[in-house]
Length: 115
Image (cartoon, rainbow, N blue to C red; front, top):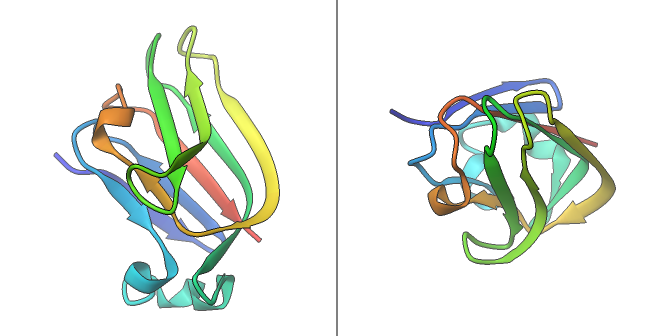
């Protein structure tokens, strides 16, 4: 299984598989998503918000900045399947990373809205 990533306009939707790392930074993803080149300035990503929609109780996620072991800048553990979380940022980051060890779901989705 693999994470499924859909990019539409300024929205990145990731359906997490719980066993695969995920990374988005300006240097590695420009080739895969050239339509987002203007949103990555230098080595920075401009993020408006991040939303986590769990697939089950106790689904967990940590999104890190800079690397798979970098500082956690978004995290959530769902109390139930309806316990979504949205965090507004309106800020720039040195890439977004999700280590497979930081995810406990095979059906949760993460929505990243870029500025």
